[in-house]
Image (cartoon, rainbow, N blue to C red; front, side, top):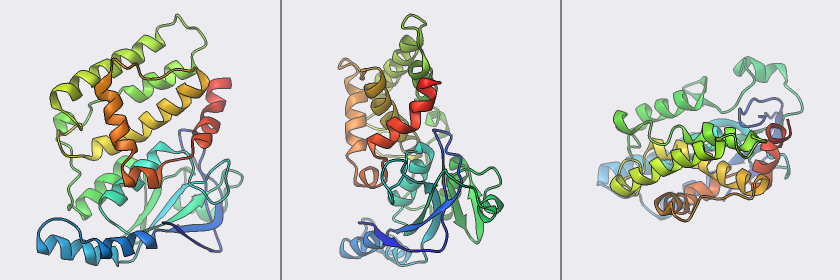
Length: 270
C-alpha cells in the first residue's frame, strides 16, 4: 500500500531511456510496507530477522522515478527504475518515491542528476545514478537477503531487450528482427529448462530483477503494436514471466500497461 505525501518539489523521465525532468508535487511513501514487515517477521536466523526489522523502521531511501504519462500520481514505465525498486522491495528497505514529470527540468533537479535521467537514489547523502551502480551499491550496503548473481550467469538473457527493440521498431516483416528475438528467447528457454526456474537456479537474483521489467515491456509493447506474444513452445520462458510478474514486489512496482504502450510509441512511430 502506498501513501501519498505532499512535498514542495518533484521530478521526471522519458521513454525507455528514462531521462528526466521536473519533479511532481507528489511523493509515494512505502510506509504501509514497513507495517507489513512488522506484522510478518522476515524469514531466517534471529539476528537476520532483527536486522531486517530494524531496517524497515529506518529512514526511507529517496528515489526519483518516472511519473505515469496517463494517470497522475502513478509510477511511470521506466524498466530501469523498476529494477531498482524491485531490489529495494526484495531487500525489505523502506523508501519514498519522488515522481518525475517530463514537462520541465528545474535547476535543482539537474544539479542532482546532470544528465536529467532517472532512476537516481540518495545513498548516504549522495545522489547515485544508473541502475547498475545503484543495485550494486544496495547489494554491498545491505547484503541480506542476498541478490548476488554469480558472474558466469550475470549475462544470461541480456540480449533479449535489444532484440525486442529491434523487432518493435521494424517495419519490414522479413528483415530478421523477429527471428533474432526468437533466437534469444529460445536460448533463454533452454537455459531455464536445465538451470531454472530462475537465472540462479532456485533463488531469485539481481539478474532476474534486471530482466523481468524488460520482459514486461516486451510482452506489453509487442502485444499491442504487433499482436505478438511469446510462443507456447517456449514454456519455460512463459512460466518464468508468469512467476515473476505475479510476485508482490513486481506487482507493486510495475508500470501501467497504458504507460508502457505510450512510452514506446515514439520509437514505433518514428
